[in-house]
Every structure is written in C-alpha cells, then in structure tokens.
Length: 494
Ligand SMILES: Cc1cc2nc3c(=O)[nH]c(=O)nc-3n(C[C@H](O)[C@H](O)[C@H](O)COP(=O)(O)OP(=O)(O)OC[C@H]3O[C@@H](n4cnc5c(N)ncnc54)[C@H](O)[C@@H]3O)c2cc1C
Image (cartoon, helix red, strand yellow):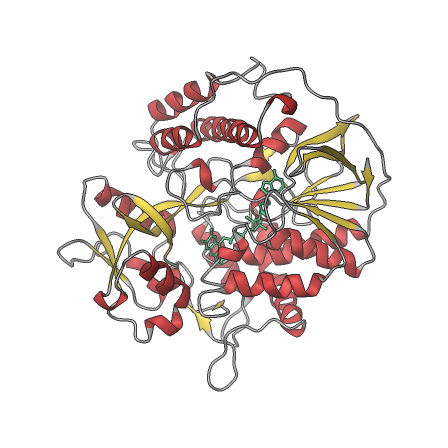
C-alpha cells in the first residue's frame, strides 16, 4: 500500500493546477494518469481562456455572459467566484512565466468567441493555448509531485462512507493500492461516448463511473456540449476547428455558399454553441455538406497554425477557404457534484475541472470558460485541502465478486447508440431506447456496480465505464422535462 497526502486522478489542467498549489503549500502529491501525461483534453485546447482583463471589461460582464450562455441555470455564487477570482489568478500565472500572445504594443491580445459581448479570450501560440498552458504548468510543477503514467484508476476505496484511497492497474498488470486523506478526481469528461468528438482518446466517462460506484452525487449529466465545427470528411471527424475562427470572421455556409445562421439567431455564427450545433446538424442530417468559409480572415495560417495543420494534414487546402465541418461531442457541463473548493458529497473525495459539476456552466458552457475553471477552481481546491485537517485512514480494496455481462458491446456500438438516442436532438422515445440498451448490459439489477477487474482487460473496464456513464446520462436526460441549452428535447420546449 502506498501512502501520500493527496492522490490526484488525471493529469490535465485541473490536476496540474491543484498539484502546483499543493506542492507550494508543502503537500506530498501523487498524480495517477491513464496514459502519458500529455494525453488529455487540456493539451488540445485551442481558442484560449476567457478573463476580464481589458480596461473596458468587467467581471460582471463576464458573469452576465456566462449566465446567459448557461440559460440562467448556473449556480450564481459559483459563477461569481469563477469570474471574480479569474483576473488575479491569471495575472499570477503570467507572473510565473506564462506567455500569452501580445499585440505589437506589448498589450495582451484578446480574441472574440461566441456569446461573449466583447473580445476577452487570451490565447497562446495562436491557437495552441492548451499546449502552451500545460507546458508552463509542467515547468511550474517540476519534479515536486510524483506522476505515475499508464496507471488508470479502476475504483475508489470507500470505508465507512468516506473515500480513503484508490485501486489502479499499472502497465505491468499489477494492482496497486494508494491511500490518502484527500482524493482529487480530475479525470475529465465523456467525449468518446460519442462517435464524433474533439476529445482525447483517454476521455471515456471514467470520472462519472468512478464517482457513481463510490456513492458520490452526480449533477446535470444531461448537459453535453456539441461543438458545431469539427473538421469532418465523409462523415469522419479529424479534430476541432476553434470557435475563434468564427470570432475572427469565419462564417458557416452551405454548398451554394449561402449563410446558414442568417435568420436563425441575432448573433448569427457567434450564437451560443448549442444553437449553432443544432443548425449545422439540421443540414447535415439532410445529407448537405456545411463549410466554414474563412475567406474573410487575413493571415489565417499565422493566427491559426494548429487549425491550418489539422486541415492540411487531412487534405483540406486552406487556400480554397472552405473547411468542411459537422458537430461533435466536446464538453460535459455535468459531472460530479462539487463546490468551487472541490468538496463532493462523499467526504475525502474532491472533484475539479471537467469531471466536476460546480454548475458554473449551467445548461451550456460559455466558450473558453473551462481552462479557466481548471486554473481557478484547481487553486481554490488546493487551498481548501491545504487548510483542512483530514486524517489518513487506510483500507484494502475488496475485489468484487460480480462478473461483467458478456459479450460486451464495442466502443463504436456504444457511441452509435449515444448519438442516436442521447445526441444533439433527443426525444422521450429515443431516451427510453437508450436506457433499455444500457440496462441490457447491467450485471446486477441494482445498477452498474463494481465488477471484478481481475477478470477484465483495461479496454473492457473502459467499456464498462462507458456503459455506466451512458446509462446515467440517458436517465438524467429522460428526467429533465424541458429543453434547456445543450439538452434539446424535440417537442418539449421550455
Ligand atoms: C479540442 C479541444 C479544444 C478545446 N478548446 C478549449 C479552449 O480553447 N478553451 C477552453 O476553456 N476550453 C477548451 N476545451 C475544453 C478544455 O480543454 C477542457 O474542458 C479542459 O482541458 C479539461 O481539463 P481537465 O483537467 O478537467 O481534464 P483533461 O485535460 O481532459 O484531463 C483528464 C485526465 O484524466 C485522465 N484519466 C481519464 N480517466 C482516467 C482514469 N480512470 N485514471 C487515471 N486517469 C484518467 C486523462 O487521461 C487525462 O489525463 C477544449 C477541448 C478540446 C477537446
């Protein structure tokens, strides 16, 4: 058994933000991650970080935009904390060495993204913000925390109603037990539950499944953001075309070159993501091809080097100014119910980043608010832990006796069902069909309980987590009676 002060599950921006601050405060931290530390959504982030740093901006304006995109379902206190703490924490991050893009006069360059009243998105390396931010966090953390790669967490260990540790399987197939007074779940969202996604391959709903099996409460699982513009060729997705492209003048057009957002929403191409995604989806469902027309953007390659590379490596000629796009699963607003300071409903378990639902995003996340969430709530969670005095309790993992229902579906099968039944447009019938599908794989009538990992491969455990998360999401969507933001029920409007 390995003992430490804090165990962090995942290695993205949320995990690193917590780890850096905890190490500053003298804590011993172990980070456990499924693959290598670069494999996460954080390194893929393009557009940037929204923060009220301009003289003509204010955190109140950022607050209003966040609430408006979230359909007012956001937790107001948590949202206020996010936007109010943001300028100070970002300034400190810049002081630690982070180099955001600047204008010729040395001032910060602000990009515009959907549903923001003004340009307030800072970025780095053009559209390589996530990578640059993570490189800075790796530098800031140095070797102060131990990072164990290729070691997925399989289950949390719960004793007398408290999270006390985790069980992992390392790359040599050994099961390892770790115990600590504080377990931080930062294992990200659910993108790969859908066939088209912007997400890294390691993001398979593990946060939801781990928390569910441990008894922690989940929240707003039905709110899944589909990004309107994934590079899509012959129905296959090849990566994200940042919203900043539309912020800089890109427009969505059909095969005849007609604007598809005209008359759909007053903000046209910069309407909230759920509105734009549904509009694109309604065309692609009819078999039409939709393009992002970038002819109005000068110096595209230097402003969007990452997007240019994604396009050109997949045979799309940027000089023709038309990028073929379709929507794909991008961000999970729902997750493990948590406070901005990380506490979940299970003592000892903290959740942060996309894994958590502090409800700052409501029914739809405002663009570029999630890297911010990782940095700001990561910091608050770390300070909360450093200021608390939970005691170490240890326990061995009891290997469950329950076996999986075999044969399991493939990841592709699950993704297909999710898109059909719990996708961009949902109906009561489709959701019931989804729930029934998932329940046919339930090994125990009581739910998707812990199963014996000794009888499963890593891939099977991932599939089991996907089934668990898919089932919980379908049920949450069925129970939300009205359409709100990213949860769109045909014939059930609010
Ligand atoms: C292509 C793309 C572009 C984006 N652009 C922006 C942007 O411009 N601005 C913005 O604000 N947001 C953006 N987002 C969203 C943002 O990047 C994510 O919401 C954010 O990075 C999530 O950070 P995280 O630390 O919570 O999770 P992640 O960065 O996803 O990290 C999760 C970690 O958990 C690990 N993990 C998963 N399961 C397990 C397990 N069982 N055991 C151990 N480890 C596990 C993963 O491998 C990974 O290391 C973008 C997302 C994508 C995919």
